[in-house]
Length: 299
Image (cartoon, rainbow, N blue to C red; front, side, top):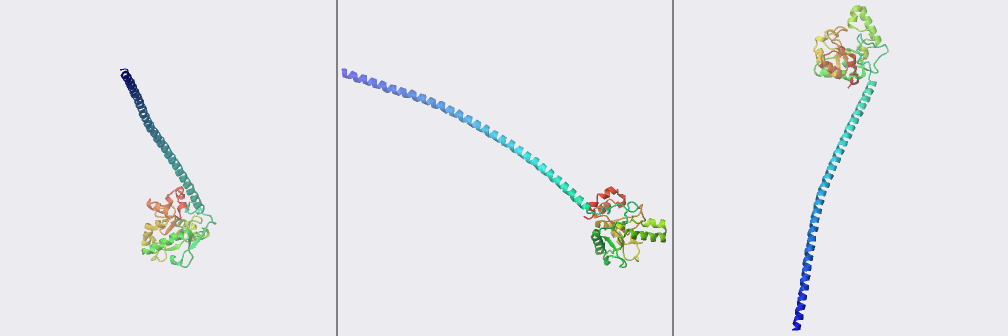
């Protein structure tokens, strides 16, 4: 009887111990699970914070990048504008230098108004004169010369006229101060001073002294200048001479000399073209406006 009670007691004790262990483990597990849940929540919150912070950081980085990129592009544009302005300034300076160089190498007298306006002294002569070949002259009895850089334009004009079945010859070209003085003296003797002054310039006032002016003639006139305006050659010149830089110095109604349809002066293609398009005469322009064309006279 006593043995049985001890066994039972031991059983009870064992049962209590097992139950206690079980309960302890149960509550311990619940505590741990609670801690795990808390930790999981904290991890979730932390992950959310990390995600939010990461997104904000990415947005800040993107905004900063865009701002820096825009600033960089703006600075590049500013630098580009500065470079463009510098290039323009360099180009303007270069153009000005080139213009000054061209002007320094160009005879300043070539576009001056003479014909009772400006005076060429007895020492003036073109830097270089070109003798006109015989096939371009009306007569081989005398030498005819022209300002050297003008000759290519005159030659091309006469050649193109010939290709259009138009005959043109050079009757006279460059005259020195002394030659003009001698010629004017002869005209005074033959026609009288008053009449001679109507069609012949005094020495120093003749466009022929520049070497850029020619008297042109054609066949069928017996070697005379009179009647030239009634020829097809004259009409061709009226329509085409400006293309080669030549203008009629003394058209009808001019205030300097009588009408001279044979007298053509080289002023450069640009000026001659503008005069033609505007239906103006060389002597109708202000000298200041004419001077602006000097730099392009041989372009």
